[in-house]
Image (cartoon, rainbow, N blue to C red):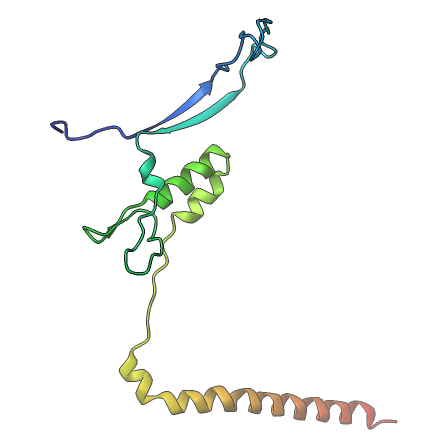
Length: 152
């Protein structure tokens, strides 16, 4: 059935496209309407071979939609969502958003064993350090006010 290794599933067309309705009669009449704008504006059209790439599957147990592009048989997630978001941004000429979406965020979780060992020390530091800094700031401010207004 599929003997070629690569199949084109989508095309992005750019250029000047004339309207399909140019130089046609008005609906319901035989009155000829000449093309009002013979010079077409530059535009972009995205054509994708299958409309199901935008459709979410529904989980049979919870009756909730799955993530866009998720294949439950192979348990993999394809980049359907990123494709449509980037294509929409490109068609709207918002090229800066495509670069931002391409960035990956790396999560660096804390070591749970070390976190459990030093939990009380971190709690004491997070509770005590702001109080000590606030008391120190208050003492320095009171001392500086006393020095400034002691001359009167």
